[in-house]
Amino acid sequence: MRGETTISVVVCTLNRCARLQRTLEGLARQTFRWFEVILVNGPSSDGTAELLSRDPARVGTCAEAHLARARNIGVRMAAGDVFAFLDDDAVPEPDWLEQLAGAYDNPTVAAAGGPVFDVPLGRIDWAICTCTREGAVNTRSEPPTERYLGRGADPFLYLAGCNMSFRRSALRRAGGFNPELPHYYDDVEVCMRLVDAGARIAWVEAALVRHDRAANLEPVVGEDPSERVVDEDFAARRRREVRDSLADLSAEQRQVLEMAYFEGMTQVRIAEKLGIPLGTVKTRTFAA
Image (cartoon, rainbow, N blue to C red; front, side, top):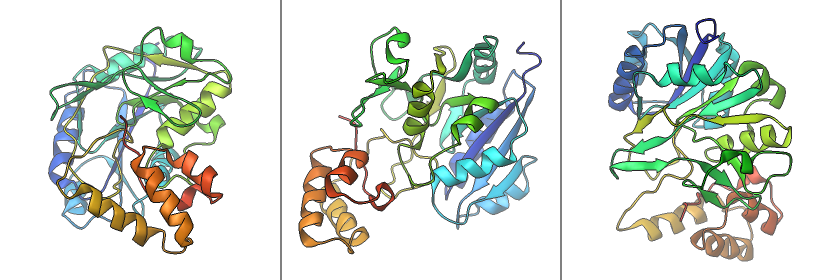
């Protein structure tokens, strides 16, 4: 089956020209040959457009820094039987697509993904990923993965955004990525919908991606939700970001939101607590 399966690799990027070059080189080394590359460029200003003009990949454009919408643009452009997603600061092992394609030999598999080796930390930091219904993420959950599948599973299995793939029919049946989630958790949320539809998600331990994550506090296309960033002035900068991005909320709402943020409350839970649309919440929750 894997010889007949075609894969569309979607990479969303924003202002990471140098890192994107390494991602493209990693894709060029793939042992699996039945694939295309689709690059969706956000409003980059660092020479990314020039790089993409020299690359044979198909190129799309997202006018805003919005990961879910950028991914959906890539989905609409994709022609493969399977859609695989890779970050613009991640490099796949040469057999990455070969391993993912093998998972789809089983016709019941709707999605498949593997571990992520965190280059700065020097270890695999995203393995079996799960999330509770309140949004608490665990990136090193205990096997077997079947315990996290099935309608209403809590916690449920999800795939790391920089190493995930979906059968075309399954992702389109699910409606694609949620455009109300601007930067984070779109990968978690789409997997939740698949799980609740009774779909099977496969964990492929041999499908490894190396994530040389960029230390960037700004919300950017292509960044994983459970990524951690350390900065001496982190707390002060995040408080300013919360205050500035949510200026239309009441003083009481802003105080509750800021306290919830630093307690690690998820965006979903924050939105519920404040009674505001999820898309309004522009802060980020870091995994413990």
